[in-house]
Length: 314
Image (cartoon, rainbow, N blue to C red):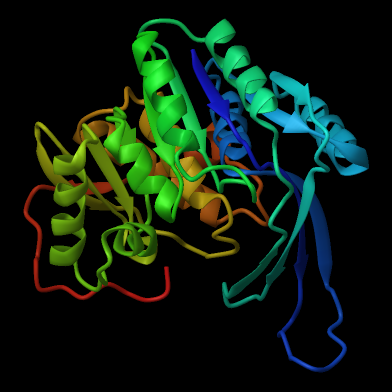
């Protein structure tokens, strides 16, 4: 069982425009509405590929009600915990060349007792050997060490913890010793106070995060694939993409694929990359299914060209 906890879920509206022109009227060529939030996306991707998973999330207000309806419509198994805060909405502007502009609301605070209710929901579903995925931004007004607190609680219960967040919350969580963290190159650089511009930088950053407390570090590099650092070694991998339609949720699908394949080793990295590549070729934050992933070939190596600069942006 893989249980995801999303403290700051969202309703994601994606609109496609021929070209975004600031200061003028932009005509929309297509639009879609998807459930959002990093942990929500991880659960959606897992369930779409037949992996036993459940999403735990706070919901509030009309947007929260609509989010639950969308998840129900997709057949997503979930525990929706009612809270006083209204669920946020996000907007993604997507251009045909793959350029994505995101406009995200910050969300609203959660009370301490509401966070404990969410944690109780996770421990009621996951047991020793299961995974709990703590994913996404920390809502305003919530302490930066919230994921660290949850990591310690779930780890003490024998649950394997994966964390995908950013800012101060990331390194607080690393200090708590999670089994896995999955930042992107910008997030790991910000957490360490340094820039990640090359593969050498990414490898060094991953190893630093491991030494700080995380057992396994999976760093997503956008167009340059991903770096995996764990006890067994360091690998880099990528997977060809025919057409980049939207990068929204690709990192979540990377994490979902990695966990679906066991959460360790080069083969899990290859699976993760296939899931992420399939996600990038889908519109909005839609998640890939088996038919989207089948036949893809990922390339993984432990021979890393340290001098190679990363392609920016991801």
